[in-house]
Image (cartoon, rainbow, N blue to C red; front, side, top):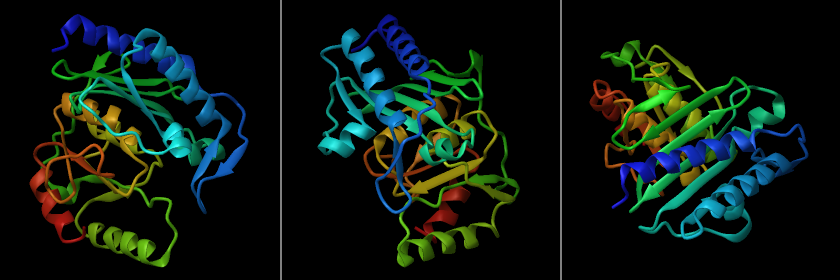
Length: 264
């Protein structure tokens, strides 16, 4: 069992790591797939964050997007595990679109416990400790109070696969959902979409087939601590390793799941 003082220390360390990482101006771009990008910045930021946290917590485990891409998947265990996306929204970063962030999550016994999502470009720092609320730049945040799906703002993403089957499935889902919500947004960052739910800017969000647990480890804690719910798009319990996520305020979950079940 980890005490509250330790959790506060973990959060402070994660914030320091995220702010230390920042973003460099270098934009040497490599392709992980047809449209999936990685830059020198992704790699440099992940190395910086891991080095910072490993010095403080040498017995903890670490899972990162770039190390996973280079060395293969690391199994999530019950040990305290830092899960890091050093630059969520790489395509946005390459194009100068300001929705990019560092996402750092800490799981303990596989449960998301600490969340830090930091966008240094617009200076927004989202933080949460399990059981202690969620904050934006130190101010408490709450999910929206919207109760009608038809009046809701939905966020999702198109993903990085460009085969016809995937594109057709994605566009068909969007076509169907547009009849059931007010409007749709694609910001290009899973972590920031989750934070959008947490602070009430967005009402409902789902994404299928995203990169891995680093996209959701920080944001999931922040949503829950802001009074929201995080779940599988089928309505089942959220699985941090499943590459499927949905989030909303509690009022909209049932209607949103009903809409999604017809599509996923």
